[in-house]
Image 1 (cartoon, one colour):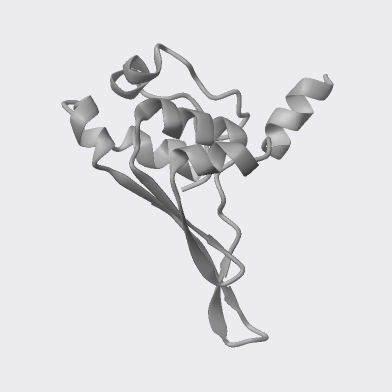
Image 2: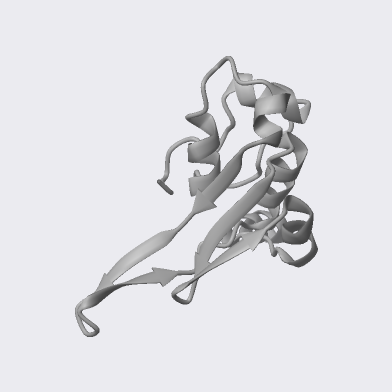
Amino acid sequence: MCSEASPRLRPHIARFTGGHQPRSLTQHAEIAALNLLPEGITPRQLRHTSLVVIRPKYSQKLRRTRMLCAKPCRECAQIIHQLGIKLVVYSSEDTLHRRTPEELLTDSVPSSGTEWLTRR
């Protein structure tokens, strides 16, 4: 669901982050998924939520679907951590990885859009 749609969190989700919004130029799949959460979601429900982010791509050469890197960027990892999400599962090189938000924060890197913004 990564797209050029608004990268902003919807108000019912942003209230759990103290209004903190991602600095991304495009909407990342994590933000799109979080924005689909129901308006009545509670912090307790978020603490029991696992977020799954995969990036499938069919390879004509291999004649199969591969799982490409969908590791959340630093901005998304910060939002996920602030929301208290329990677990994140993401794809990378045909493997699924399970990480807590704390683990994601330690080794996440800025998105290319965030790097571009900081160079300006």
